[in-house]
Image (tube, rainbow over all chains, first blue to last red; front, side, top):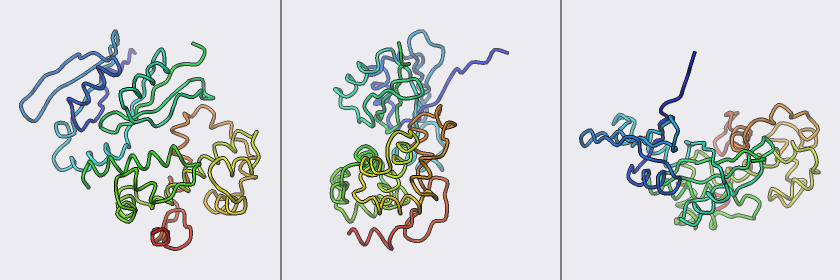
Length: 135
Length: 151
């Protein structure tokens, strides 16, 4: 049975900031940006050529009012994470650092076969970037 | 708590996670959060459920566990590498929080951990993550009232 991931939400505090970061800093392209009134915006990005879209989900749009404060806290505290693979980890990392991105961990070779680093997106999500070793 | 304050506290916590091997103190951590030391200590505990010092200690122990699992470093090397200055205090703290002495932990087979990403192992092996007995003062049960002692 074919089984494919199509959308994964990334919860964000400020959608415009998130959009600029994921497109300008990381190279994602916008797939859908649909304003649905003041309370909702359907905004997805994807890596060029990939069918797997990240749903940039504004906490204020996607989370019910009763849980919004709790979700904002979760995001602000840095409890959520996104894992990405890139071709040239060190180049991506240096460009992120040069742009003032918060750094959690410089690139290192890991014993489980990848070189990886950690940064935070503008909302505070832990962004884990990796490159398979030996590439 | 305000999202901006939480972001400042998160940056201070990220600093502890990165710079754990340095002799960090609460005033230094508080500067990273742009707060006064006493306000910072209160707010950190309110946000993350433990004092900054307890968080730092459990980070150091989690790093020590990771280095001991490698098997090629001595207990003394590991003790110094994670920011402890006394082997006695390292061994007793490790034994109390991890449940066995560092030498015994180092000697066990840890092969099953090998495929787990470091950032995940880091969180899951942190003493207290599984929520063991917590007392009124801190989850890692050091001397009474660490916040007051540090203030």
